[in-house]
Length: 63
Image (cartoon, rainbow, N blue to C red; front, top):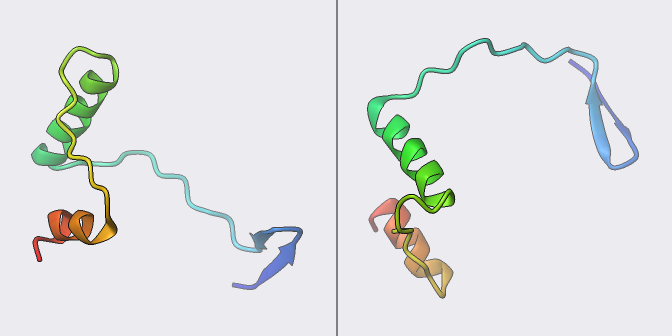
């Protein structure tokens, strides 16, 4: 595969494969449904807010 730069984008000589179906596990499906419901205002937003990167990384990766 070769890539050539054109403007600010990189174009590939190789075409991308089209994905027909993506299977999410049950936990991911529930998270997506909850996120959509929160966006629509059907459920209160339960997302944590962080004021620094270190706390966000600790919450994401449990360190």
